[in-house]
Image (cartoon, rainbow, N blue to C red):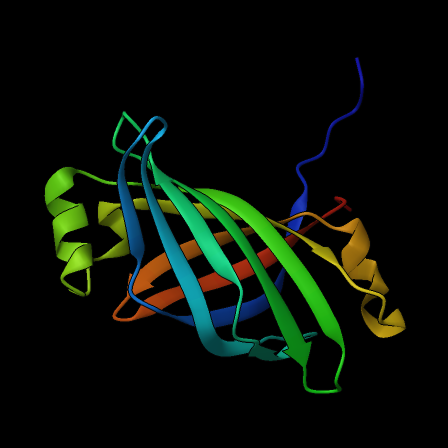
Length: 158
């Protein structure tokens, strides 16, 4: 049997993204599509600091089981001028009443809903090239007018 060690997580950054109100397309064959355009935001972490550029977005789908499946693309600009493209999928799962509270911008405790993402990155900046070879995971939180994440890279054990 192959030797297995749990991977370790390295904190990359905390992010706050400001979003426009969603464009809601109800009654599509796949479900309810909600398109959130990114207005901007911030990224702050041990190895990455900068801002989220306007124009990215989330093409979220409310599935038949009530979960929200995320499809996000955004560009980060680091404090040293590098551009990093990030894309991720993810899931938000909550009881309908909790989704209602989130939509009303209530500060809902994280234990009341499931919100995780799996980012991957592309950049041509040499100082961030290591990101091209990492998968990350993040824990999300819905906040008034946007979302926040704590994102960690998955690193080899030991």
